[in-house]
Amino acid sequence: MPPGGPSAAHARLLNAAGRWAVHGGAQLPLLVWPATDAVAAHAAADRAARSRGQLIQVVSRADAAWVEGRDIQPFTEAFESALHRAAPQSAAKARRLRTEADKLEAFCLVVRAASVAMDQAAFAEVGRAASKALRARFGGGSITSVFAWLAGPAGQQALESVLTGEVELAGALSTRQVAEAMQLARQAESLREKG
Image (cartoon, rainbow, N blue to C red):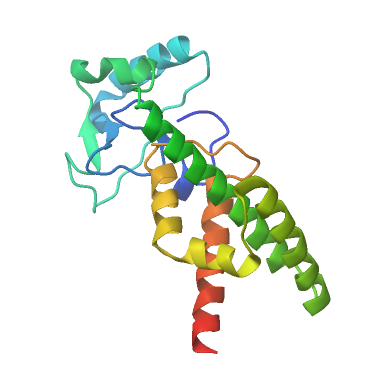
């Protein structure tokens, strides 16, 4: 785990593709070492830190729901390259993931701003500012479409790409802040649909 990581629920761990992820998945399981082999885990962290030029910490974490080969992958020499660098992605995939992650972060910023609006006038001002910013950056959008996108399958897929380490967040928000904003968006959409 890189230093200064967030809370345990959103700690970023190394996956089999050499990317930092919150959780593993079938295509990108987290790399693990047996608790009885802490020496090997620390040695791997040292190799990764030297290669990547950053401090990397070993953490102890277990989850009864983890399935080997799906969520986690025991480290072997075959995964040595993951310690040193992330596996390359196709240019098209990297572009698509970057666009979706940028949209995810921008939309979460809108939700966070809307969530602290003290009254209807402040909320309307957030909506106007959001529409202007979204038009400039993404060619259009409204506060309503932001909430709907985040609460829907496209937003969930973008978040999953971040959580599994396919793409990194590039802005000021942490993974935890993005997850909290998405929860707010889902709650707001649920209320809107009921009302």
